[in-house]
Image (cartoon, rainbow, N blue to C red; front, side, top):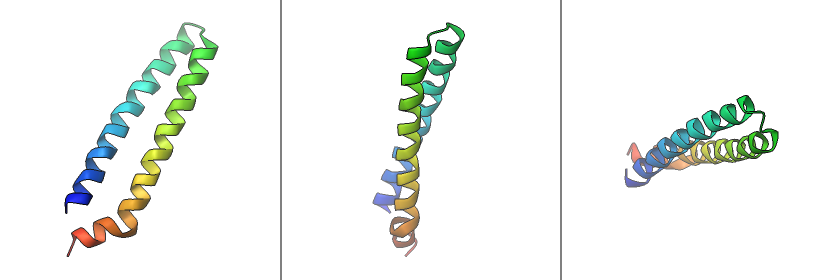
Length: 68
């Protein structure tokens, strides 16, 4: 249960970060800051990849073990 809870908490943080980076990227685009927008998009994609890894980890064994 503890591991499942930790993964869940980590995913909430990832989603929060993704929302922040997405908003900042949009602001950079509105300000015609192409380089800033590009960097923020890269970071946003990295956060998304981390979220997917956490989901895969949770589905693979952690949540199954927590159900026992």
